[in-house]
Image (cartoon, rainbow, N blue to C red; front, side, top):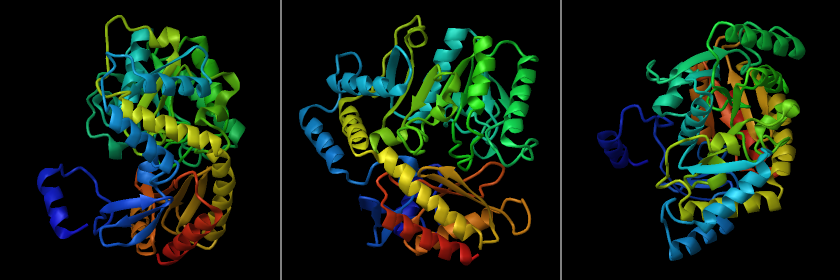
Length: 427
């Protein structure tokens, strides 16, 4: 980024609008898994606009769909029949795993989660929400109110009563020393205990893999065990799939499917990757839940024609080219490579994740103390080597986040791993 643009940014945009890097970067264009900055430097992109560029930069099918739709009509609102919106809703409902599904489109994941909370609280006539510690669900007033991550929670005020339960972080907290089966059992007992001390909640909202929290997750099946407890009491399960959806985890199309033994969630929220950069979010719910509102509603920009055209083209490309399978294969190789690197990197406490959703947690060598300075240093060094990555984490931002487009090749995975190896060795 040029000094002039940085100065203009600071003059008109909020101080709390975070920028990566000591010398912030202006990305001007991209192709495939690569982007270029204003100075002409080329980077391998392992963060994809915060998991949003899901298939590839400048994917021809998406660019063509956007261009053709822009030449016909950009927008009309939900007050009129909208063919691209119906067509994408049909595809999303088809792959959702939710019976008798209805789909409502929004412009972001934040708005999708906000809508899910509206539906759940209206359906259950309760404003109490169960959420996971270390979670993140967006930046609206209600979404901030259920976020269990202090670094992303700027106010304690909320329209909701939020109760936090254990389970989203496997390797930290009071149950970290337990085996997977015992860990799940302890979290279930904690959930039951919480429910014994409150009025009936509306829903549990949970990310199958916590995104901003540093790509942490519970043992497979934990949310299925939670669902058994919730279902007995009529409490809904909302799966926040904003970061985990569309095959990113490789093993499954949706993150909740790792916890699907007791059936699908009542509500699923999505965003990010479906639009491959266009602003699309949405909610999927059983018809009785989606239709529970007793007042009119519209969405001015949710489901607008140009974003729906992009989403449909992107989803079709992803399925036709089995990018979920590619995420499983290439992601598995990348995780193995990073774990081999970590064995010789004293700052690395853990390499975790699945598919192309990988976290590297950094601590001070020989301790479990988070090391946010090391994370920032690796971020800078990776950029200097031609690689863009993200960072996140709970109590401290000490996890590197790796989430390339799902079309990543084996050669590109090896290239990125080699750059990360050098960056970690520089600590």
